[in-house]
Length: 72
Image (tube, rainbow, N blue to C red):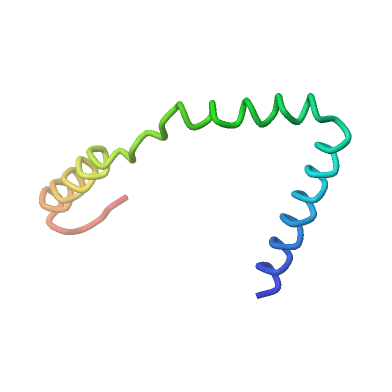
């Protein structure tokens, strides 16, 4: 609970500092706000489920070959 309150406080303080900075430097703030939407152009790649599935299959094969015993 304390961690959540601490993180929210730090986040609010950070946003306050950004707003204060933006009021003092409107041209720089406009530039920063113009760059933020560019971040959303590059999509976040989906997780690699194929690799996880391959690892599970290999683990099953290893267990079958070892007779269910892990000697590692």
